[in-house]
Length: 152
Image (tube, rainbow, N blue to C red; front, side, top):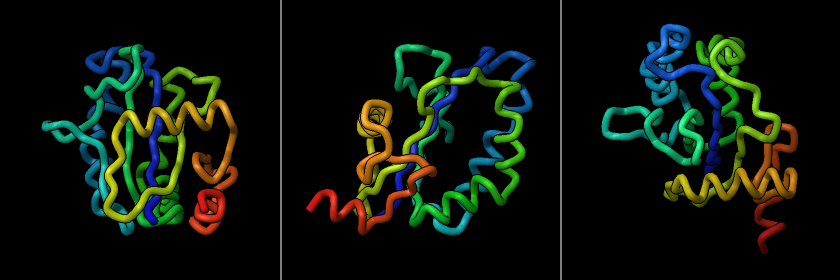
């Protein structure tokens, strides 16, 4: 099994605004860093190579990021042990606080590429049910074995 993740953010500014320029200017380098990271499998992107124009929610200010990794540790290593963490630390400069869960993790079969609809369903499931082996956060970090046991 591989780990899929969706995270969303609600931009405080238009992506063309000078207030968010540093974030936008670093999307490509950070995405390239993800793609070259150990354990990276796939990421959502359009024909231009990014996902900022992909509309998954009715609010046009919500941007999405979705990817697949070979393990939770691989995703954590990218998020917290690379240059990506510098942007996580500055998230409040560019994005509104979302009071409900803004990311979700779930297990997918090897070779499965999740759809944006599947990812949104997982986020809604997490928001409704809390952490379960079918949709979870880093707080619970359910294993593949727990997922399989729950879905046997």
